[in-house]
Length: 72
Image (tube, rainbow, N blue to C red):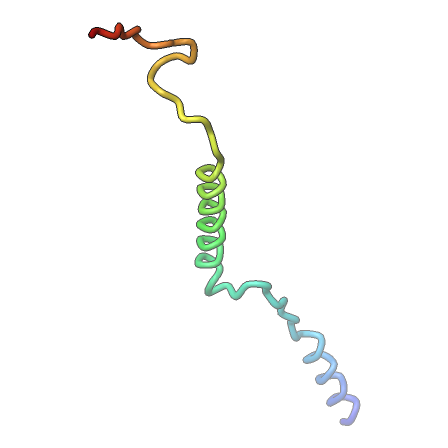
């Protein structure tokens, strides 16, 4: 009888599944990725709008404008 009990314990140990620990809890996975994407978009927006670019007018760069005569 002792041998039978030992075999049953071995079988039970062999049937247990080892669960992987997730880096992110599956319940919060969608919220995590949404937050990551929003942060990346915010960074791109900030970087794009902080660069100094020369102000461009509606005219081409070689346009001098109309000449105004001084009348006295």
